[in-house]
Amino acid sequence: MRISLILAVAVTTLLGTPAIADDRAALDKQLDNFLAATHKKQAHQRFWAEDLVYTSSSGARFGKETILQGFEGQEQQPATAAYRAEDVDIRLFGDTAVVAFRLVAEERAQPDAGDKPGDSAPTSYFNTGTFVKRDGEWRAVAWQATRIPAQED
Image (cartoon, rainbow, N blue to C red; front, side):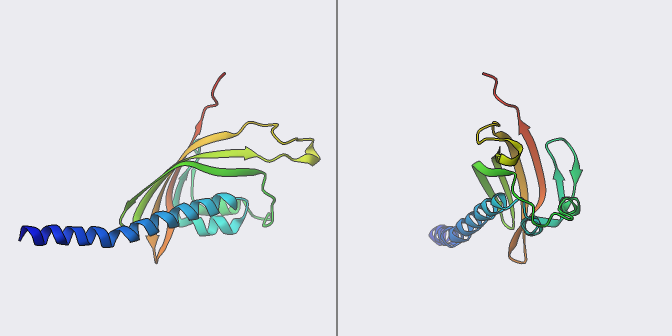
């Protein structure tokens, strides 16, 4: 009886591992794709759930509709910053996932404004997102961003 139980647990663990790895890889890819396209409305439509609760680094709380309204009349706006995720930690709980990471934002030089590459220092934020898998797709339902103070030299 005890051996059967151990075998059942081992088989369940082995069979469940690929699904967990697949979900982790999907969330990681989704985050990277989103950060590469944050200047596009379509990226936000895909990333955020309809019932999103977003708390910004300034303490403002709003939902997906407010984010999308920021794109009104600006469907093809150029990217003014480059974003990347560092120290990504993805934790899965069935059809729910928590994704925590350091967001690094680097302003892009605007030559027509007299900017040169490297004129501004990157800004970093701690971000934590809660995702729910609905109809086979991961969507962020809650988000918290906290600006990390610049290090003083």
